[in-house]
Amino acid sequence: MRYETLNRDAAKSPAAWLVLATVTCLIAIRAGAQVQGGGVSGVVMSTDHELLRSALVGAGVELRIPNGDGRYVFRFGAEQTRGQARRVAPPPCGLVLPGTCLPEPLVDRSQATALRAGGTIRLHGGRQTTLSLGADWVATKFQVDTYGQSNGLVGNADKVLWGPWVGLDADWVPSARLPIGLEAEAGVGAVFPVTHDQILDGYTPFETTIDVRQFRLAVVWRPWAKGQH
Image (cartoon, rainbow, N blue to C red):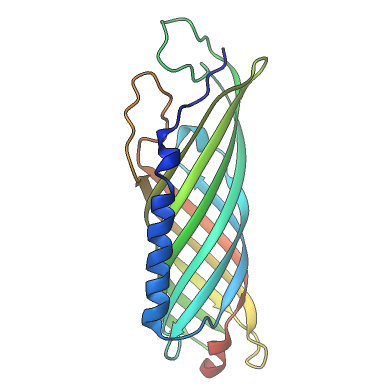
């Protein structure tokens, strides 16, 4: 049996992205400064959701706006990750009679696209290394396509969730003359649906709060690091 989700959230999801983009613009105006830093990162994300059991791996970009000497930094970024997991379970058939959808081998192919806005506060700054505490508000669109062993695509679902994220990041900028270095950041968060959809006979696996763990390793540009050496 082939079942495709009638996702009412599709028409509402742009609101979350618009709100986050507006907040980002207000932060930039409030900072009163041009973008003075950024980075490109590799991202690994894991969650406690059944359809996202395997790690999602991808990449991200980030821009930063330091306030003064860089102790406080506003930041915003975007990420995209993908993953795949296998399981044996009944396919997502919606509301059907018992025994209609029997367990079978399934493959869940997942994708997460995220926008984030927030900031960091420097806890310790040495000649070459910096340790900071970061906090962001993250909006993530999760999308999962489920494939059966013999029936091809048997279900799909997508939804925008958002919520807070906190983590620690460590920067290493070896040279003051060339403020390019490495950054490692690890943190946790929780995201919840922007809107709730109650569809009697629908497949709505993302109507819940999802705990998120994430690790990022980035090549960064930190021009304000010159003043710390």
